[in-house]
Length: 304
Image (tube, rainbow, N blue to C red; front, side, top):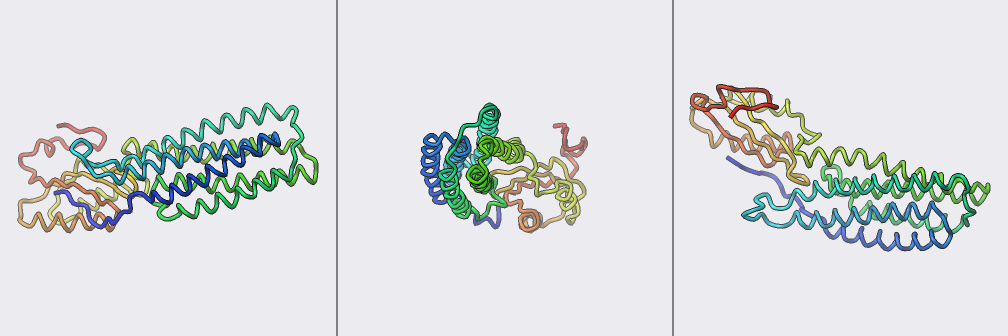
């Protein structure tokens, strides 16, 4: 029996992604223009970072739109998985950009150019407002939606980087420290790399059908084994289908008493309420003729 209860999931939030993408694209163009005009690596690096975010947000926007497509004969789950692949591509982009920024910043340390500080401060201050406002637009559900979380973390990190650029501009203006420009760019690269690593690891795990980090597989197995009439649990698999949707399959060895339909319906509701597993597929076996039951092994190796 396959059931999925309690998901009034909002696939998409495409309007929020669209607005955030367009706002960031406009600001990136503005920042890059001032960066070239003033020869400021701090502004150019932040603009490059923002360009990476625009690409990432564009991917998240497209993924949210794809996730709304209905299942087909070929894609029976629909396109929900796009919300897992988007953060993976997003993280890879960030890793590449961080390396490029660090290389250019180190090259400039030997002879940092003189940078007009006030334009750097003004443009970076606009960036703080833009990024915090954009993060506010995608804040809903980011704790449980990897796609939104990737966008949200990018935008908050951008605001912090813009703040660093403002402080660097202040240091150049008041103290004449021209080395703060490449130092800020190097800091940008570090911020990108640190943020990207966690997102890369989590999105890679999701793409490889790992058990979602919020779920303890052993706890789910113990919960299933404790159900009335259940004598064994095997072939338990838990993975993410997409934003806010968790699938599970399991074989339950249960005695031949009646009432399996009511048992499964109650268990499906319980899995959703307790663990957030809203796509459970449960197979009930009587344990007398099933090949699996004679060769129950650990989760990492099954005999069929």
